[in-house]
Image 1 (cartoon, rainbow, N blue to C red):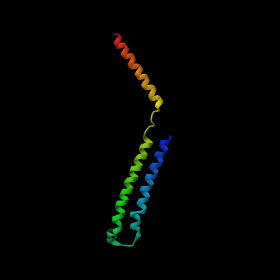
Image 2: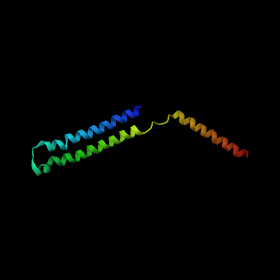
Image 3: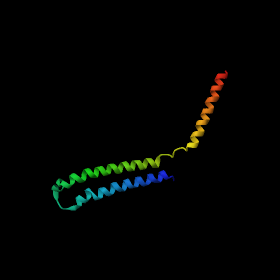
Image 4: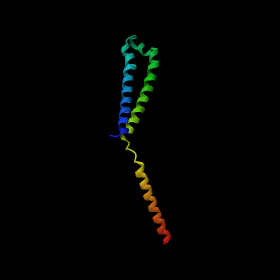
Length: 104
């Protein structure tokens, strides 16, 4: 496995762990707090802070997971030496074709 794929797995797992742990420590902590009970628990001022922050952290985690997945599934780039060889072969072929058309 290439170094890029290993970094992709690490980024994907960090994004997943960050999202899951923040859900556990954010909204679920407020639900299990028990300081305010009944329907009035959802009108607590802490929800106005926790919900947007949780959504922002989840979006960042999803972005990290997407980047990690992209790194895992993208094939490695072609080495420059091979590209240079292909370009030289194409240039030689095009020069040969030009020489043929000029001689005719």
